[in-house]
Length: 270
Ligand SMILES: C[S@@+](CC[C@H](N)C(=O)[O-])C[C@H]1O[C@@H](n2cnc3c(N)ncnc32)[C@H](O)[C@@H]1O
Image (cartoon, helix red, strand yellow):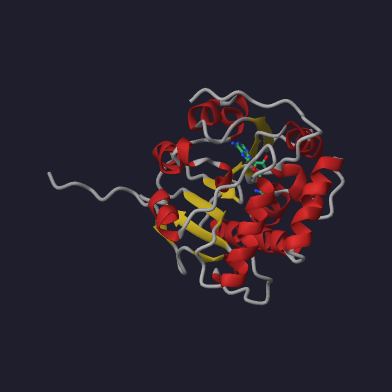
């Protein structure tokens, strides 16, 4: 697909800026704060759920570092309200390289200001639904070597891919471009988790997002498992993010998380 990238529209709330507001940031407008407040009215722990998602991101990135991966492509990276992935990985994998990708101009501008002068980090304004455009972006080509393992992070960003945009095909296009040993980390809102209260909260958040510039689409476990085809999921598989390397102390989020590794294709018999 050829994506048209949006202009800043301060009157329409969007995911990056609402999330920034929920996490306590200052890169948001009145429309974003109103949407955030509507979420909090329905789900008072919504901000804590955002923090639980960031916790999951950190645990998953830590695991990628333990696999020896030193390149990260963060799709839908958002506004670095609580610090970016590059700050987290540079303590665990010195010299690691990171490319941030977001479709939201405010998020991209904030991120660029944060990483200016850092030769190992770039920020691309691009649409993650267009893998060819993302992977050929100069920021990606400058910093990442796609011939070596890369961890693709798609954390709380794939639920903005509409059913018509075929999530499985989008993920498959990234997978096809990755070297063996690469990884994919996802988290994704859902309403089919066992916890009915949490599922109701996620439906409430999606109802608010439906009025924004970035509607969210909840997917069930089977749909997400299908989108992860070709990746070997590390334990404990595709689960509630609180159960991924057990953080049951975190508040409910009704978000699935998984980390998949791309193994080398088995050698074919002569
Ligand atoms: C909820 S935030 C998540 C930020 C970060 N990944 C995290 O988990 O903390 C979702 C981000 O995805 C971005 N996003 C949504 N649709 C996108 C698209 N088609 N291409 C690139 N970014 C997108 C939004 O702009 C927003 O910054």
